[in-house]
Amino acid sequence: MPKINIEEAIKKIKKPFEPLHLVDVGDYNVYLVELKGEYKRHKHPYDELFYVVRGEVEIELDQNTEKLKAGEGLLVKKGEFHKSKSKKSSVVMMFEKAGLNMLFK
Image (cartoon, rainbow, N blue to C red):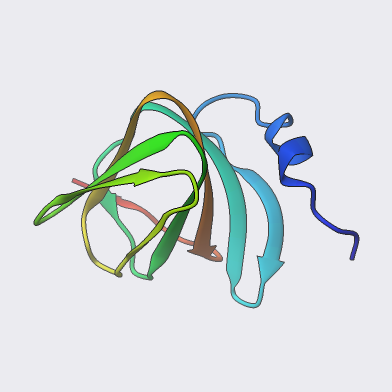
């Protein structure tokens, strides 16, 4: 498999909250996503990992809100409602179980 250039991949993102598939790792998909504004509060039946590549992101959880900047990540455990938001355009690498279904609240 060829190497992955994250900066080049970011240029291929078309619009906020539309994931760009990078690669599959076992049963997980790896995506780049531009976050700008707020996404709906939801949960998954599997864990999900957020890693901030560019910008700053807030992940609102049931008990608290985590503020992340470039180079930081957060594991959201299965079944935990969460919502991502970013005041300015930010890019996040997400690791999600293949075939992931979202349950909105």
